[in-house]
Amino acid sequence: MAITPAQLDSAVSTFNERLIQVAIAIGVGLVIWLVATFLIRQVVKRVLAGTALTQNRIFRWAAPALRALDSERRAQRARTIGSLLNSVVAVVITTLVVLYVLKALGVDLAPVLTSVGILGVAIGFGAQQLIRDFLAGIFITLEDQYGIGDFIETGAGEVAGTVESMGLRITRVRAEDGTIWYLRNGEILRVGNRSQGTYVPAAAPSASPPEDNEDGSTAQDTNGDQHSRD
Image 1: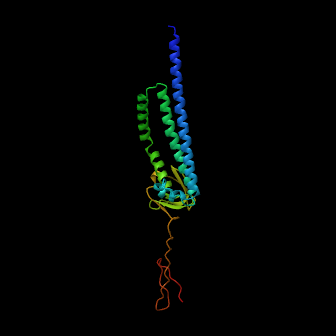
Image 2: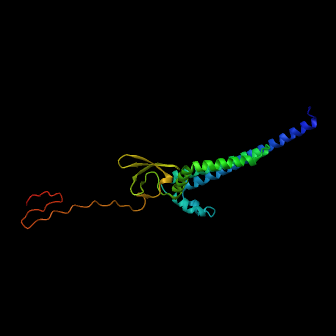
Image 3: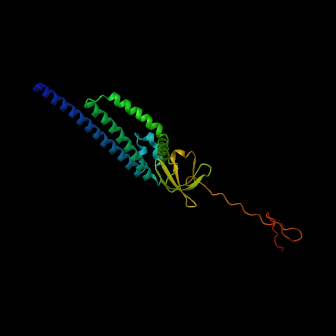
């Protein structure tokens, strides 16, 4: 069957329209991503510079989290949070752009969204512990529960040592005997930070002096050993 000039012109016109829509979706997504990363970078720079950002009326709601960053570990926390925000923004924008591109190309999104939803539920069930670790790591970072160089103790003294590195999933602790412990953030239910506050080591109990008997000899110790006479 021969294609008429009118049909060819219609096909070319449709293709051009879809191509323009794809280009617009990609361009808008790129602009939004650039603006978002610029804003995140500026916020991170302000946090690195100090706490003056908390005086701004726009960011006053975030004062507790930003105040927690005001420490010698502020740079590490700011970069960690900035990297996390950049990743979230990139994933969200990429997903939306892909959906708009598929829609512009005439793809039916209903089956695609259904498949993605089922896949997301399956991944969510399979990665519950991983998601829990990441969420716990985010809150540990925001709340400044501990950081690199702090001496921490988890649980009922299960692990005690100096934090050597911390990420959103794993915290690495070096114990006093040199053992390296790798703690999953989602499993840290209780942690004590000896580097914060006014921690004072418990004093070792002093041995009581031996009591002299009336005849000048000393009393026996707890092991039954005799001490010398005066």
